[in-house]
Image 1 (cartoon, one colour):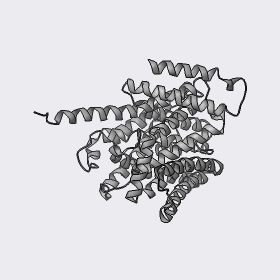
Image 2 (cartoon, helix red, strand yellow):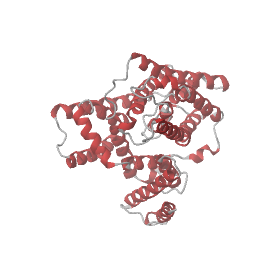
Image 3 (cartoon, one colour):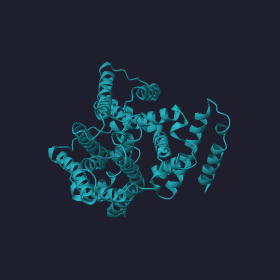
Image 4 (cartoon, one colour):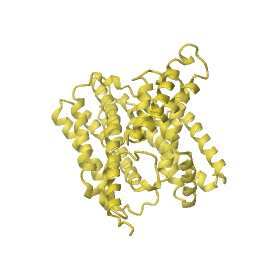
Length: 413
C-alpha cells in the first residue's frame, strides 16, 4: 500500500510538474527522477504480488508514456533516449560477461538450438501463409521476427548462467536468420533499399564491440580499483550511447560482444561481474520503464487484419518448440536437470524492441501500407506477450521447480 501511495504521488507531481507550463533545461532530470521513483514503487508492488519486477517496471512505463499520461514520450528530449541506450549497453555488457565457459555446448546441442530457431520460423511462416491472404514474403518476415530469442528474464546472474547461455546462442541463430531473410527479400525487391544498411549497422556494432574489448584486453586498459572500474564503465556507456545515437548504430550487439570478449579472461570477467552486481537492478529498472513508455498500446485498439491469428500462431509455435518439450532442454543441463529451462527461454521483448522500435531506422521501416501496420502491431504485441505471459511462465516454472527440489531434499534429523 505504501508503494502504491508513493507511485500515485510521484505521478501527480510529474503530471502537475513545472515541465508542463514552464519549459526548462532541467525538465529531463525531473522526468528521470519521476521515472525512477514510479518504476521502483511499481516493481516493489509486483514483487509483493509474486510477479517479476520487470512487469512492474514496464507497467510503470506504460502509465507514464504515450499510452498513459503522456509524461514520458519519445519526443520529450534526447536525455531520456541517452539514458535508455546507456542502460541497454550496460545490460548487454552484463549479459555478455555470462557467456563463458561454454563446456556444455557441442555440435549436437547447437543443432538442437538451430533446429528450434528454424522450426519456429518455418511454423509461423507456414501458419500465417496458410490462414491469411498475405504475400509469401510478408509471412516469411513475420516468421523470421517470431523466431527471435531472449537472453534473460531478469538480472543476469551466475545462478541463471545456463539459461542465459542457451538464450544467447539462440539469439545468434535468430539474428543470423532474420538478417539472411531481410537481405534475400531485398534482393527479390520486396523490401526497401535501406534494408542492407539496417543489417550492416547491426553487425558493424557487434564487430566494433568485439574489437574495442580486444584492444582493452591487449593493452590492459581496465582500471585496477573497483571505484575506477565502475566510473569507467559508467562513463563509457553514456559516451558510447551518445556516439551511437549520432552514427545510428545499435548499442545492444556492441555491449554483448564487448562483454563476451572481456569475459574470456576469467579473472577480468569475475571482477567485472562483481562490479556490475554491486550496482544492482537500476539499469534494468531504467531500461524497462523507458521501454514501456515508448510503447503505444493504444494503437492496438484497431488491430490490423489477421493480427490475432499471427500472435496465436507465434505463441503456439514457441510453446511447442521451446517450452512444452522439456526433454530437449534437459540435454543442455551440465549438472542437475533444470525442468524450467525451456520456459526461461521464451521471453524476448528486449531483442524485438531494439530491432523494431529503438533505432533511428528500424525493421518496421522496411514495409509500407497495411503490411507495415501488421508488422508494427505484431512486434508490439510480442513485447507485451513476453512481459505478461512468457515472463510469468518462466517465474512460475522456476518457483514450482524450486519447491519440488526442496521437498526432495532430506530433512535434518
